Length: 388
Ligand SMILES: C[S@@+](CC[C@H](N)C(=O)[O-])C[C@H]1O[C@@H](n2cnc3c(N)ncnc32)[C@H](O)[C@@H]1O
Image (cartoon, rainbow, N blue to C red; front, side, top):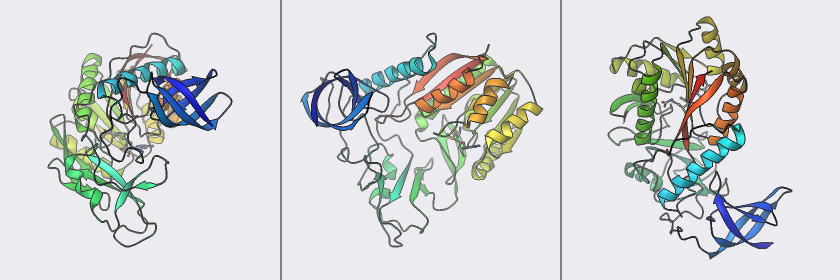
């Protein structure tokens, strides 16, 4: 069924939200103030989803997306808006989501910190197999908007210029390889997840070792901004101990906790833990300990055996957030004075914060959003919790 509606706002994820007979209707690609024609796709009791058929009255902000693959590729949600507008809507989404989920009206949410680069900021990309089970050389692609097709593209506007060649090259994949990640080192040379290699990246003016088989942040300029914000908070807190959970290669204590007397890193990836030791040594920072394994196991055991109130716990979990056992532990057990959470998924962060705040032992002191992934729906958040 086709319907006409007017869009009120952009919700988290990038869809336009309008109302049809009082029921919320979400439309991908539609902008606030637009009158559109849309086709109903999903009709539930309390909301519906529709596909944009035609913009009848366009929003004054609407621009032509610069990417020729925008219709099929699932990567970007905001190319039809000027960057400043995208930031304005992301700010709004963070404010509304915090209000809706946590229902705390005193939370200070600072303005979204802008990415210095609107395009060309990614120093790593993952491409997917396009020819199933084949041992023959093949081109690789991104996952499409439908969440399963593979889209072949010649270049991606989000990727660093030096990654250009991987989109058109033929790749010979191992039978088990469904996707391959391509990363740039500090001299813009390409490394792949095909084999283990150590390489250097430069972030916030510091050269760090990382592994082709480990995690490293994607937008290095924004990572530097997060490091600088964290350093400012660490200076204000003056903790006696910094515990880095989900530490990767130790990026954040190296960028932000130089003056803290005790630093422990918790990380499960053995390729990354090797780099942590090397990075601390080369940057001349003392490292008190590395705990290898699942944080939800190593950390509670460590903290119960080594209590210390003047502790700052820093967490930077993967997109799926933290285990509920860890969230409950953080809510009830630690006597740590401060927790700082870095998260790349707003909804998952709120799920985790709700659990941590449930015991009313911490309060949110500050929230700073960072636009780590311009043109996409994602927003990175740094949240400071203080012991009440
Ligand atoms: C988002 S990254 C953060 C990395 C680090 N903060 C940095 O910027 O380099 C998440 C890290 O957590 C690690 N990880 C994921 N699940 C884990 C778990 N359950 N226990 C320990 N480490 C985990 C991953 O290997 C990855 O290095």
